[in-house]
Length: 247
Image (cartoon, rainbow, N blue to C red; front, side):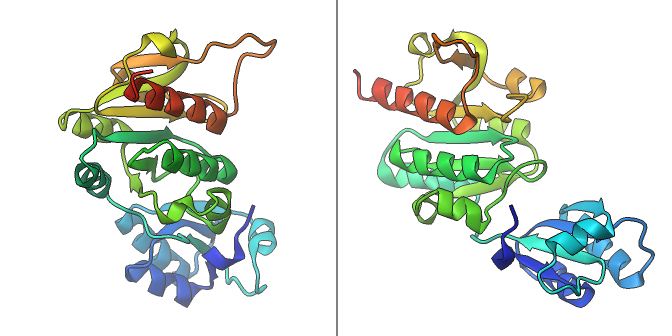
């Protein structure tokens, strides 16, 4: 779903945004274009590590609000991102063991918004998402979070596995949501903890899973074998709450 409030169009506007401090999530460029301005924008995006998608003119026409996209447009973040350090600082200020939720490729903005809402309600200190192949902070996400995005730091990182290792050095343990893992009631989720939730279809990637300390599964009794990603995250988050409360 497109958020008109978080899209910019045209060569000069996109280049200016790329050269400024504007938080751009993704650049969309006409595939095969040899236009000098577009090539400049692509170079600027590469310098900043911004994902660039090369798409058809029909796709750009469908996305365009103005009808004058000039072969290029970009999604900008509707909210400012935090740093991982901000999340850790929030835990320190509250005098609590850090509780972090890491999302490995959540693509549905409604799921991302629901997870941010859950993160706030269960006392998590922040959410970490990857730069690429994942939903970002659009107005759709903000709406789905029901206001929680105003209180819950969300950090965007280039490498999830490296971020996990960095947080391990700060004392966190990481539990990966996996249907083949130990039942969550048998997994120690107390203390400094990070929950890793995977993509809606493929789950947590193998590489990220290998960087986690343990896996946790949700016991299920029905005829299907998986839950919506945001629902699974909510269940695991409140198991963390239950264990922290000593229940």
